[in-house]
Amino acid sequence: MKKRKVVGKWVLASSIGAAAISGGISIPVQQVHAEQSVNEADFEKATKDFLALAKSQKWDELMPLLSANLQSHVSKEGLSQLWTALTSPYGAIKETAIQSYRDNGVHTKATVLLTAEKGPFLLVVNFDKNGKVDDFHTEAAYDPSQFLNPDYNTPENYTEKKMTIGEGTFSLPGVLTVPKGEGPFPVVVLVHGSGANDMDETAYAFKPFRDIAVGLANNGIAVLRYDKRTNTHAIKSSMNPKFSIMEETVLDANDAVKALKSVPEIDGDNIFVLGHSQGGYALPLILENDKEKDIKGAIGVAGPTGKFHELLIWQTEQSILRAKSMNMPIEQIKAAQVQLDVLKEQFKLLDDPQYSKDNIPPAFQIPNAYWWFDLRDYAPTSLIKEQNVPLLLLQGGKDIQVPASNLENWKTALKDRNDVQYKLYPDMMHMLVNMKGEPNGITEYMTPGNVPVEFLDDIAEWVKTGSIKETETVDLSVYKDYTPGLYWSDAFQWAVNQGIIEGFKAEKLLKPYQPMTESQYLKAFLRYKLGDELKDESLKNLYELAQSYGLQVSEEADAALSRGKAAVLLAKNFTDKDMTEEEAVQWLYAENIVNGYLDEKGHYPKTYESYKPKDTMTRAHLVTMLYRLQQ
Image (cartoon, rainbow, N blue to C red; front, side, top):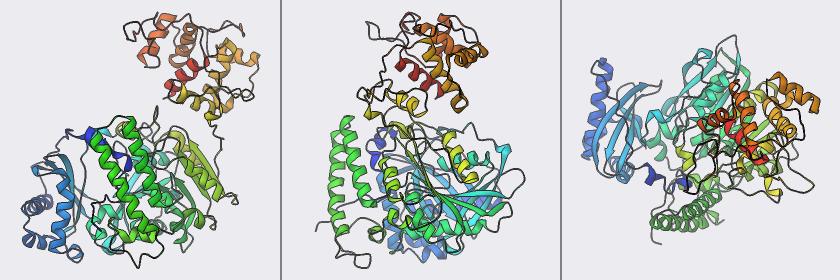
């Protein structure tokens, strides 16, 4: 059988086209200052020596620079092959610039920006305490300014300290975020998804684990996050012929739990584990390996329920469909189709019962073959339904890597357990960030964002009380006049599920273009503003509340509400200013809440007239404005 190059399991299937749009990016070079300590100067020389010898492929001279640990895992020939595999996709290296050194408690981590023919990338070199190279790997280059600092990050509310997870060859650097105040505190251990993740689970424009750590700290909950084994010990891990999900994920998660039991600030009876994506998939294994029963509860986020290789096939098929719909270059689509065909061919071998992890066919060419065969018969839902650790299972509705149908699969598998809660976040994508519009596999990954407060508050509530308030998610496809992709589609999905507005269930209609009366507007708006605090929806109470907020209402409950009048009411509530219709409309434009109507020249002029203030406010208009305002 002819060997074909196969992408490893870490590749995101939705990345078709991502390389094209990321090419040519400019990465700021962070110069190392001349005023260095002796140790830092030594590490700079060691980094430069390593780079010079690797670029010139002088492996005999390079080997003595490696630690005894790394030398025991890789030969000179293997080192040459690894270097080629890591760097050849970028072409010849033209320039190098050392960006930083950082002692993370296990290594001194050197980060180097390499500029190559096909674009920039990062080389991360981990030095041991003797100044020897203990491991190295490459990462995508990024501009540090692309990561948004969440509004809820308040450093005065917490402290952070280094922790070491495990011991010996594969010990990992970690950070424990501890709320200020009187402890001990409950704690959540964060377990990564697929790939060589750092402790922040940094990817694209996101740092979801950083967000979770600082967000939960605000709620009096400590968080332990750590660099993944395939990040800190990338080469040593890849050289293990029997590297499995146990080494990749499970053992280190259990070691993290054990490490917390001796920390004075931590309540050892309230240790929780949160697994994201592959971490959620591995949760049953982590619980099974918790021999001392130290884990009080587990939180699964976007965890797959089926076979991992079947999910990869589905991801690849979906990415090709999206690429076609977006008119991506035909060459990329053809290459992806070839890749899909190879994967299907390879996975036929994986599904063949005559083979096993102890009898892997030579024709199986996907990297980490043992990993795949070890997981072939693993069914997370079958294992977890026999366990009794309380669970909180969370899922994003706009996740195109692990679709929302997986949440329903968890529900079906665990229907006989009464200690499991579930929640769907309609606008959340795979990186745990809310997004507008429909996901396409590119835009949402390139648009910076942070983990939403609602998600963090739900986790905090469950950790503290053992339960969260569940809301049933309404699928708008049951309504005959619902159409995805229209300007109001996402807004209606949000508004219905937030209880702001209702569909006409008997008729199975949403009636988005139905005009609104003043009282209907007030009811929807006050539901948005007050949520569960709005107990009395009588006309009398609605108008009393409106007056208490200084809203200029006519008290003609059944009178049709104009768009201009609605603009005044919205502006008053969000700015606490009395405005004319013209001023309120300009405020809506300034906040990007409305665009105006299309004119005969194909433009959207931001004028009072273009807003059509005399037209009647419709249900679609209102929910769209509220949706954009809350975002």
